Image (tube, rainbow, N blue to C red):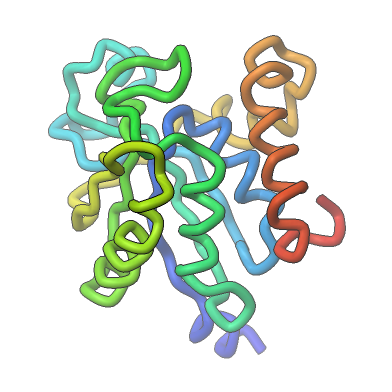
Length: 184
């Protein structure tokens, strides 16, 4: 059974602003096996959150998604991704401003890149502005500190979680109920 599970999993890295928001949404998606907050495509090895916040490391806040493509495809994941953040704002999501909050899809192979570019092309006419999501190969990835993992689940009443993360989770629940995990 373990061999079958290993054969039917894929990984993609998505940056949709603050990783707390992105992680909270994808934790609830059926077919997503693991979500980890981290930092992608910067030039500093094993950066700290404080370094990322300075905006000088080149990293984006991302989530690493491990998913079962036999349950949910990359296309559906990207539709959820684009519906739960604003891909038309460069280097910001709401009040979170800086290059670390850029919208990005960091792929592992040519097929992922093709799917990402195809979804962007389809969504562009309805986006309300140019989609600025970067689509780049993953060059580096570092997991975020432990206290960032499962942040929303652990701190749902914290101000940022209540006023920023929770509405994104509610939007997912309303718009994509067919993809919700039973326990979400």
